[in-house]
Image (cartoon, rainbow, N blue to C red; front, side, top):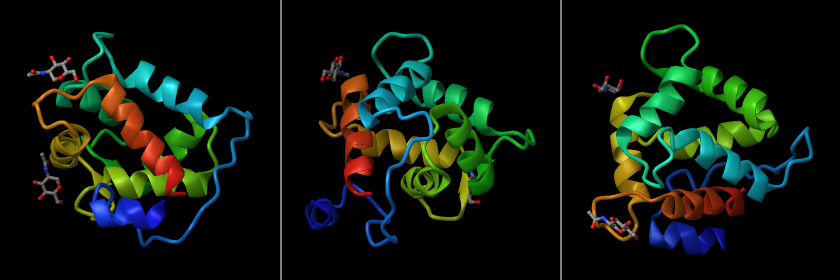
Length: 140
Ligand SMILES: *[C@@H]1O[C@H](CO)[C@@H](O)[C@H](O)[C@H]1NC(C)=O
Ligand SMILES: *[C@@H]1O[C@H](CO)[C@@H](O)[C@H](O)[C@H]1NC(C)=O
């Protein structure tokens, strides 16, 4: 599966060290994914715009209010909100940080939005985010 994902190039960082998905609240990955989507789809319209992504991931994860989310901020907030272990949160970060500079900012969210739009029709649906998160969990 991991090799398959790498070949398709959906996921950067596919050569990163393996991690395990352990959740301190014993939430399953399906439960975590559903919660990520519910929180990220800010206006609850089934569509994920860059604004939705920024409204959730930048505003809630940026603890020092510099308009970007560094790796540690991301790991702490993902762990706190979704209860996935920190190594797993870091694994998610490596996929969201599209230019691999250890900072998640609006440029990454634009690139992520394009990556999420797997049917390329210009609109990211919740279903497309769900599939992408599933790939991230499967690549762990
Ligand atoms: C995001 O960070 C990158 C690298 O530090 C930078 O080149 C880019 O201009 C930043 N984007 C925004 C929207 O601040
Ligand atoms: C893209 O496809 C989704 C369904 O997969 C649809 O909801 C959305 O409206 C489409 N967007 C455009 C711009 O056609």
